[in-house]
Image (cartoon, rainbow, N blue to C red; front, side, top):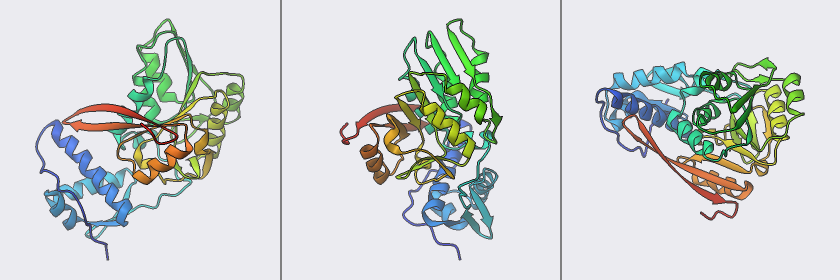
Length: 297
């Protein structure tokens, strides 16, 4: 029998236009959070507590099922097993926690100064960061992400160089392997911005062994690695460890991160930056606060 859903905040009923899409994303994130907490949800419980129809809930479950988040069962849904070796595709990952990724990416881009060379590892959050780099002058970007390179190519600048390293393509469209590692071994970068599959007290992880090796090669190019990871990445473990938490110069995440996770990251990393994300219809507003390793703002 499915476990019930408890201690849930009520949400407003559906409206129209862009607000509908915003509310749908909020409902789906809410359902996902409850699945991670309880392991299962009932359609009737969610419909009552969110003040929407059961048909609306079933549509949300259908979307989440297509994204690989859950398995639908009679009367509700159960959390799909997060296998450590499972690697979702770029399009699938790009639709998860979109507002958080945009806000984190913008905050990370604010750290980039003119005349620097940076590394962007493959990922949907680093992709959103690249969107905020268009006005930075005299910039060199080294990446193993096909989507990042293609995006920057659409907006060329004479004073920007983009180096797409070679390698074998993964399901998430990263280029990895010996060719990538060899190229990176010849480089020295000012900053590296790294997306991760998961993070926990054990470190930052990815499901792909070759990608972990390539990301470690990125880490070796600099003394300052900035990890971009939204709150859903906490306690999500991939097959391979990229590096321990203590190797991160900064972690940028969002305000939905659990307090216990904040405590661990504050102790282990040199800096923790929390991005406040507020959705007002289709607009995202972000403000960041910085916490150093001692936990002070």
